[in-house]
Image (tube, rainbow, N blue to C red; front, side, top):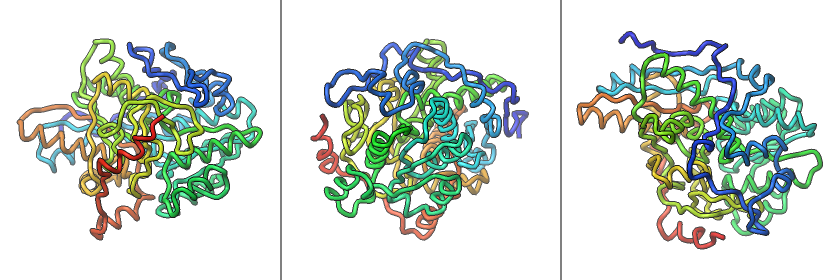
Length: 452
């Protein structure tokens, strides 16, 4: 190995003290959320019926560049942060590439992913407001796990609607949530009005994040002392997740290294938005340039095959309208194994940046993703989550491009979490029963035709 350390940690007292709001450096701000009834921009008062008060302020603020991290949240972060920036020497050697590959590992906490960065913040603001509890949805289960941990820490009730496909595929992830005190319901369910309606319209459906969001929001607004919290997509979530990119940026500065290509998996946008935040800020300010690549599943290709338009964030059409790259709120993806990447739309921040050609996007097929995941596990020793493995697939492809072209580049990707609760998926890959289900143009046209 060279003199570059295998793992780079920041000192504990060097953990960022503020979150970075990428919107402050965007010339073209993300379009506002719209009230579905009036089609006018949502006010703080309107959003306050669904979300916590201080989170609403963070959601609507396009101009404040830095938000100080409260001490209670910072103290919790110290349990598992800073997370390591790792040089993938073994992967480089196995590929025979001249490229240098780095990854930011966010799986070194019990939730197994980056989701804890925002769940602890949202639970803190709910507790500060004096609420009884919060509701949410979860796809792969990482967000539900992280929120159940955060709610246990602050003594809040936690109600989780878990996409039915994942609920059935990942019973152990469900049990971790229950161990931390959460009530977990497979979605769509017969416990809510919107759930019953979706079941009637789509009998036998395996669910989607859009369905689960509708149920979680309905439960929150109908129960006194509850608010809804979301693990991705929203501006506030990308704000909290900026701690990933801020730490990585400082670590690269300590190493004297500038990444040429930055890669993140993309479902709703929380990991990708947090990972790229300070780097994209430099790009927007004209200080440095980077290639930034979003990687999404071919079975749910919001960026690469979606349209940039206002759409509902949920299948039940009770949430605000967001201008984003979307496949349509009625789109229900195949029961693929990357449960955290099954949302029909994308963050408004990332959608605007993609529309402005500040970043690229690629879609990859499920079997190719698990091929990369297995290769990474055998070389680097960590079993990656299916979501993270989309970024691994693209990073390997970039490294092989460098090999073909004989060029040395620094490739940086986000390893969002571990895959130890995803062994059913790995079993299907190893048994060669895993398939690739990619929607046809005709199938995508149906939900697109219903855009508001």
